[in-house]
Structures are given as structure tokens and as C-alpha cells.
Length: 75
Image (cartoon, rainbow, N blue to C red; front, side, top):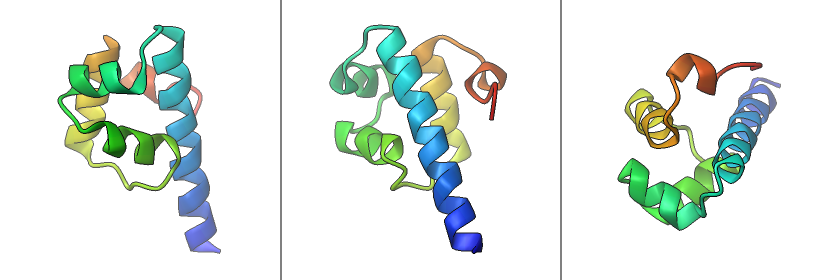
């Protein structure tokens, strides 16, 4: 059960990142470049396959031009 909860959280967060990225009209590749991360890593996060670190959460929020608080809004 705990594994399912963690997986659901990762999927929810990945969907949040994808929606914010698409709202800004960014491709995965352009977003990855802005964040200083590999495109395949971004794809893994968006699919809920990665357990993202705090430092990469900060990179994502910076690349989107929003605060970490805004990134987690609604979670």
C-alpha cells in the first residue's frame, strides 16, 4: 500500500510539472535545457518514474519562473 501511495504522489507531481510546462508552451527539451537537466530525466519525472530530489525541484521551479510553493499548489 505504501508503495502505491508513493507512486501516486510521483505521478501526480509529474502531471503537475507537465501541465505547468505545457501552459508555458515549453517542449520537454526546452524545459530540460532551462532547468539544466537531461530531457530523459524530465520525461521520467513527468511519468512518475523518478523520485525527484529537493535540488531538482528547485531547478524545475526556477525554469518555470515560479516559487516552489506555487509548484506544489493544489497537492
